[in-house]
Picture 1 (cartoon, helix red, strand yellow):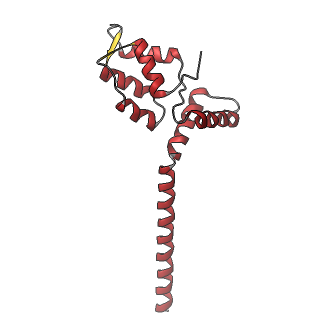
Picture 2 (tube, rainbow, N blue to C red):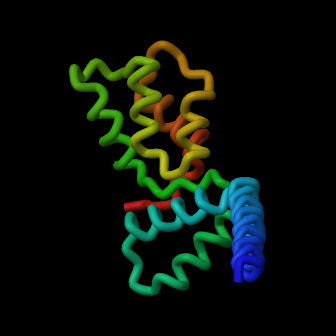
Picture 3 (cartoon, rainbow, N blue to C red):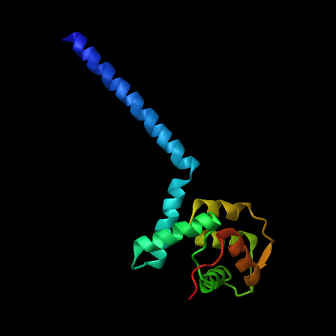
Length: 146
């Protein structure tokens, strides 16, 4: 009986090791191919657009992402203008570099875009025109027009 218990224990340990290596391999695969970011982007787009035909919408989003990569914007010009206005509370016609980064982050719909907002070179003062250009550069083409 003791020998049988040891065999069962060894089988359980071997299964756990195999399960851990499979789990680790799966995690590494997901990270390497940015699958979680992709799914997060798709969920964000679905929530933003609220399409009737979700499957068709997702297929189009995947095709767009395949063509353009992770830079697929879903915000309209008015969304960009409104975000700029929220950060330009004194209505100076410009926002600071720090405000610009934070404003872009509020529009970012993926980790990739969030990180890009930190990396791109931004002047000390940013007007609406340049903010829009930066959004296009970091967030991708504006694909949702109202």
